[in-house]
Image (cartoon, rainbow over all chains, first blue to last red; front, side, top):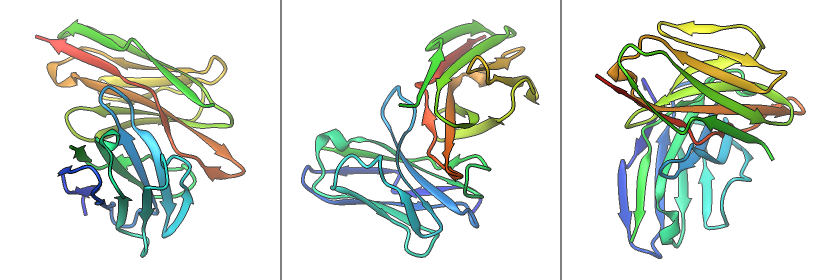
Length: 115
Length: 114
């Protein structure tokens, strides 16, 4: 597609429920990143993939968070047993090449609210 | 730990003014510094800087990197109300040839009033 597409745009869920956030990167982009952005802060790294391989998941807050990109294109970030502190804007970004050669392009994000 | 500090945190100017936004960083094995503009939605890419002293320019925006003093500035001349946004600075390091995720600053909120 023309840009990075994320869905849903907004998600309100009750504490304890699982949620799955979807990211469709720019077609042909090798690297896909997940970030979380709190109000008034810059994006905070969660995890990233080159093709289908998860390269780094050091930013995932705990084991309730997981991500996959099984075919090297669309990615899903899953949060199990959500807690109120998980409420944030979750942003996906993609880049054409791996290795930091090309800049990241961000999607519009999914705003998650856990009640 | 890698760190990016932006200043000022917020700035209010009148249309036509020139502004300079600052970004300083501490990062191991620096690879690149990037500037993004964030309005209501996604951060949009402005510049990627890898070499010291080479100015990148796009219209009224320009940016330069000083790798010795570990900072970058983003200049906007003849500001317009449409320039109102949060400007984010991010740095990337490299370790053993791989790329590492961007570390972002908190941003500078620029408000341009008519």
